[in-house]
Image (cartoon, rainbow, N blue to C red):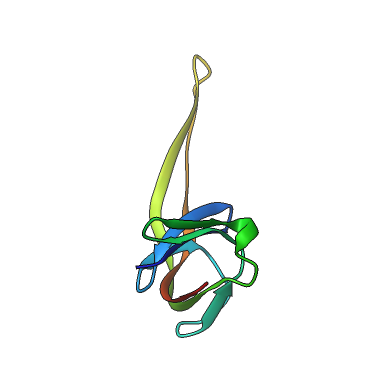
Length: 103
């Protein structure tokens, strides 16, 4: 089964067809189709091609849903000063289903 490595949102992902991944928020409603052309690596079995050999290769993905990730809490504290704060956030994410890897 062919696989590919691509980057989006400052992170790299290794995917194969029919994989479901969570990436940083991308524009598009559920059911929209997104094409990634910034492949870093692709291969099948023992044959691996680098970015220089992947001229027009693309990855096609379908947006499954837009959602918020788990809550992340952090504590700020300064010793001997009586200062402490709780801060946190929830990342906005997009769930994608990889529909095709065109090499």
